[in-house]
Image 1 (cartoon, rainbow, N blue to C red):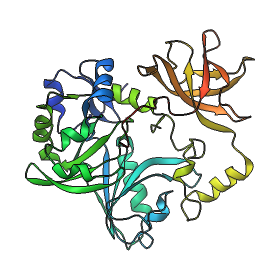
Image 2 (cartoon, rainbow, N blue to C red):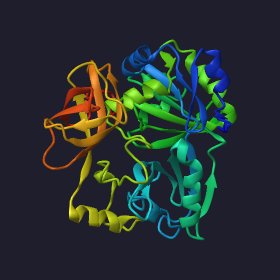
Image 3 (cartoon, rainbow, N blue to C red):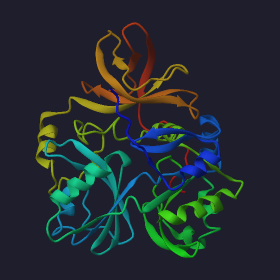
Image 4 (cartoon, helix red, strand yellow):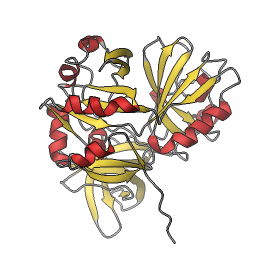
Length: 366
């Protein structure tokens, strides 16, 4: 007997339905998969501007000193030296060195932090923070009162400066508070698509008006989860539940540069041991020799037919006009340029391991 679990709605659910979006369940939320289609929405993001409803993401506030609160020990990145109004990407680990979630830390003030986490992990992450922060920290979960709209694409700055002229001053991986529609919103510039982009964090009740106002500009189109997945795979960005999970270490996932071994953090000893013993597997990216796309769960084979890995994400890349994939592959030697096969024992396609990312022509840091 199957039990149906009610899905959460973002404050824009009815807006998506009115625009003809195909809705699907994703990480416990009722979300738009696509509107006009994946290829059309890919064009908007790569060439003009698109808007995503990311209100399903989780947001936490922590008040306290980075060290005394225990926050610095929870994340793999050093945060004590972060300037106010900057962001850092990192991860939080379990005692076995596996990734509980990847996250972005925002330093709002000397002793105030916002942490943005994945929608599928809000409850689990909140529990983790509450259990590991010290009595000197104050923790708030503001996920269900904070809406998040992502404006992405090479024209995103031009679109947003109509509403917020000072947005032109915002540098990559920084944020500030701006007056928008008569109220204050936190706007950051990080991105998940490889293009210039901004994230607007606003009160739940303000999101509908903001969404409608931005979409009045004919250079902006609504886009869904389907194309967001294509865009992030083209950039070789990890997705929790695919390239990241509690049985995968950040070293496995290739997130070395987001780990500061000069500080203490949960799971550090396990990672140091993993480094000393050597890596058994490594996140890799590969292209198909055709338009055939790899799929999560496909096996990866060497030229002798031995299984050497597994695909975690795959898609057809409109940028490369071929299939592309991410996966974990045995680290026996330098794999770049290596010929591989993907699929199953009966039906394999050929491909080649390459350096990340697949898409190199974006406007991300312009």
